[in-house]
Length: 303
Image (cartoon, rainbow, N blue to C red):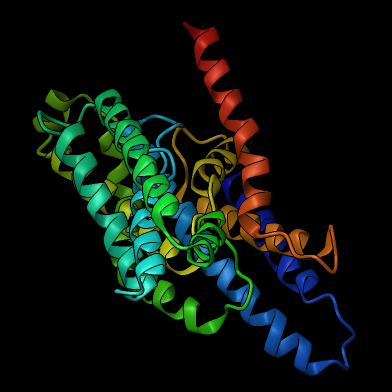
């Protein structure tokens, strides 16, 4: 069942990449120079978002725990907004650093006395609101043209981007590959009671810290290159978990689901109101926001 689900997601991703090149075969320039770089960037960043969300959700055992909910995306957004409105820093490195600093704050406040899932998520939400307020302050005090550039970045768009932006994310993914291979096995013990895990020689808290940190790095790397493409990290792991009927989000399926979501969102954004292009972040938010409401209502019913 899991293998079939993974194959289906791979097929959807492949179809999305091919369809997103939807131009005549003779138009080689459009296909290889305009469409394919964007499709590759969408697939790579979507995979990073999916994996980042899957790791954080699996560790916290909370479907609401994703980089765009717990403040990582907002930290990257604040740093990118400062860079864009002041011109003092390069945008991508600043966004990466901002996302990681936000993750460090969440760890400091939410995992101070052991890794409590509820405390971690609540601390993340608090950090996210504080950072969002910081973004609004910077935008309000910036020049109009700079504020508009920052707002476009905050929406999340792949327009005008391609292989150059995909390369850093691909390097992070390849660098994290050994850890991800280990994580697929290590996640089996993170859901155990701490005393039981220690009884079999496992350090569960250290593993949760490590896996959540890897998820934060992946999400920050993707956000730094394409902006705040929200809700992919939230939705993709849950789609893959439900399709595979797994106890926790499967990593490979989450990566494929995230890649498919961003590729298809970018394609839809180019064609829905053509020739006007909608940023991919608008389409992913249109999918993710109702899903977030569904998760909140579902959790309330269970209580």
